[in-house]
Amino acid sequence: MSRRLVRLLPLLLAGLAMSAHAADELPRVVTKDGRSALFVDGAPYLMLGAQANNSSNYPAALPKVWPMLERLNANTLEIPIAWEQIEPVEGKFDFSYLDALLKGAREHKLRLVLLWFGAWKNTAPNYAPIWVKSDNARFPRMRTSDGKAHYALSPHARTTLDADKRAFTALMQRLKADDPQNTVIMVQVENESGSYRSARDFSPEAQKLFAQPIPQPLAAKTGKSGTWSQAFGKLADTAFNAWYIARYVDEIAAAGQAIKNLPMYCNAALSDPFGPAVSGGASGGPDWPVIDVWRAAAPHIALVAPDIYNRDPKAYAKYLDLYARPDNPLMVPETGNAAEYARFLWPTLGKGAIGFSPFGFDDTGYVNYPLGAKELDEATIEAFASKYRLLAPAARAWARIAFEHRVWGAAKMEDGGDQSTTFGRWKISVQYDLWRFGERDWTWIKTDPSPTKGKPVGGALVAQLGPDQFLLTGSDVRLRLDDTSGGNGMMLRVEEGHFDAQGNWVFERVWNGDQTDYGLNFTGTPVWLKVTMGTWK
Ligand code: DGJ
Image 1 (cartoon, protein in one colour):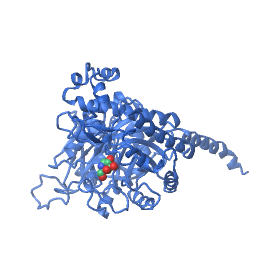
Image 2: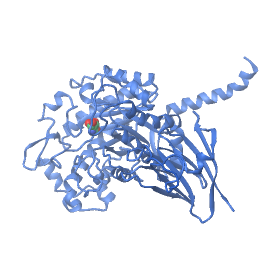
Image 3: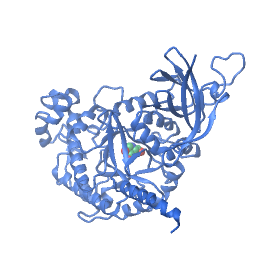
Image 4: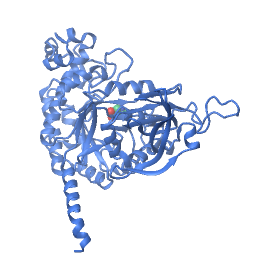
């Protein structure tokens, strides 16, 4: 052995031991001082996700999934695994799809979020096996208020819960055996649970429960008491449905976690964020009016998460506000894949989200317009890919920064108006639809409108690294930093750079002159800037 190697050996061994240890560590969601991070391999991880289409969950479809994830620069694939495919015959399990999925993900250096399509998929039992769907004596459907059969499965049937749980735990057992490297980092339990067109089950068993006082943990969480109607008024049917669906889901999650303790979450079909707090979405799912109910009922669920298919930037911002709570880490597990949604990545991360995942990204040719894109053309893919390209190498660094520092983000509103926030003495302003040179009030020279004018692009992301130091990025935006203390604030140094694999800042160049005289101007291709502010006298 050479001398050099002998000297390096202890270091190498220590490094190996560290990485072995980290890889052993199960993914988990950690909240500290009101900020959250998804820890993967022992360190914060930012999920730059994409969700495949609903029926892409077969080995034959996977070759149409991987290339799209690569084009997007995504680091995580969200993809369904359906009860019907793992247990087509009761008690006989088939995990060939899971095996193909794990293998493909590892080959493509991707992490996975598995979406358990069990008793509820967009509220319906369509992904349950035929032996479940067609045996409604054993697996009863809800009853409407006039006693008719309703399409959704009832959360009150122990038989359904036991069967769903058995399949889910078989899946978790398989994961425990076949995924020691934690390729799967999170599991979504059910998909957009709840029920449409009937707020809850009105079967005789459900009616009996509905007449009882609300459960103690819910009373403690909300400060409410009495029966469901007394405690929740107009929201009573939805809150009741939410409680029992969340308890059902929690029992499944707990059983799965007893086998392999992965973070689990539930996604929500959303009602109008500005409407009254009654569920206009899927009643009983983790919709915003009943987040409290879900948090009280489902302690094994790390978070409830909004599926945001609303292109109105005000509504988008409101949903982020509603779900980013001290008791609920923010993650956007689904959002539209039309180009205009891409700018919402900035305010999502600015609210401290642990992940973001536009829906319907694969090459199967299916599109879910009007929710998402009409076509996955180059421009649509690039709207997301350009941002992920910047963030992917920095995903660990950003996740750590957002876990430790105050962050903020914004996206262009419909009127293109300015936005701002303050960090200590510094006011950060965000402006849209400006050329990269000159000011809005210049009249001495004729200027064409900016090419982004009227277009739904533009947004910014900020982290405060120290009292006078900021990490900035954004797309189609101008950022300004102003001193609000009455002093003469100035930009001391504006560095463009990137993050290396260890999360260290790598300096590339200094911005000055035209690049800083008219604010900090970001094009459609974002870059990182580290800005140090100071004062002159
Ligand atoms: C939300 C659901 O969670 C998805 O599975 C999918 O059905 C979309 N809606 C619509 O494409």
